Length: 352
Image (cartoon, rainbow, N blue to C red; front, top):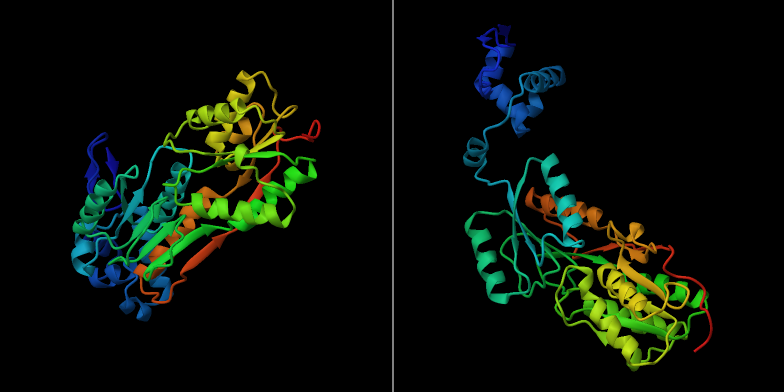
């Protein structure tokens, strides 16, 4: 038999007993109120000596003490829960963002509930109401347009509308366009095809406006015949394949393609190969996002990198700062993009 730290005896293989706050206090020969003040970081803990605080925290770790969530909720009149509203959950864009959110919230002992609306307005409204009914203290949206001031603190990833009560986490699309188009121009590309994003995507309008502006500034002409609008909603490379086919079928030569995102770029590369052309020897292709598979595609994909996981962490940190009393909040947090130059872009083979 094995003796526990509490001086009790338990049989090998027996179900572990839940260690209560009162048990920790007894183990340390302190009052439950003192132990509670330290472990809950309450204002009354300020008067407790540092060595006592450290002794309490060490004992809590040693005894594997876990606070009772429901007691904590009732005591503080809080749920320590936030809502995450996403357009999609398993795609290459939302997944790393949610991973970043989860990592930060786990460190702060918060729960989160995730709902997926897939651009269904009625479903979005119903799910938003359900999250509020479950007492979430704040909301993070991903690729979801916020149209009115929320009743709880809200952070919008890829949010572009300035709304009271909302902090927008936005990529610097102007800088992203400079990186991508300058890269192609320096490689000698003058005739460039473009895939515009689905209008339902939060970034679509702002990204295209930035591309159009930067192209004019650096002397690149955008040909309407070499521009195509993605109007499908597919989280797989199938998204880009048929639209690249349509561009190629117009029989108007181009030496480079700037796709809306990495998924559509990968689908476009397959369409180019099936058309009998090579990437990058005949057509260079550049994507957007730098999803995990971009570097391992063949050829490896040149892309504009936005740090998706970090964006999730920043969103969670900003939201908890507001929930926990920081009344001042930024209306916008800008994220700087980077260019990941890889094998899918090369010098233009000739002029068109």
